[in-house]
Length: 129
Image (cartoon, rainbow, N blue to C red; front, side, top):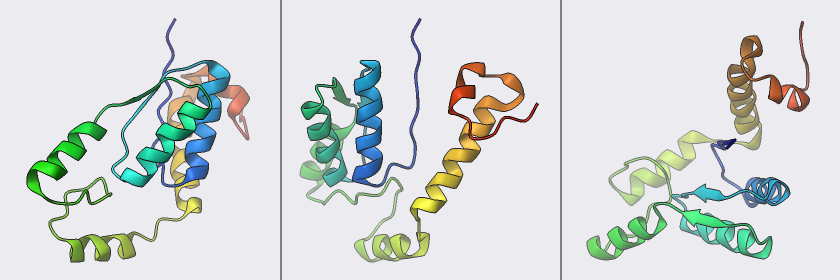
């Protein structure tokens, strides 16, 4: 029986460390891609140190495209055409840890709604019967 767990909106070393710790506890395979090359390198190094098997799906592709096109990797998972627009986009987002916690809570709620995933009950903060 194979179980998967998806983590979204990973933007900090703390988020990565939490995921690597969970993967280590479960003796899991960690498959991911980070648009931000610095986070990608940190995730790979954390996984190595924790002896977690790590597979970067698109990192080599992003690096290859960057080299071929002689353009830097923007580090954001959206198609924004220029550096100036990327900076404006980053400022406009104002994505905080609180925002990502709320998104994660909504995703969890949708997964566990109406008893669809009873194995998630131990992770719930509140269970309404």
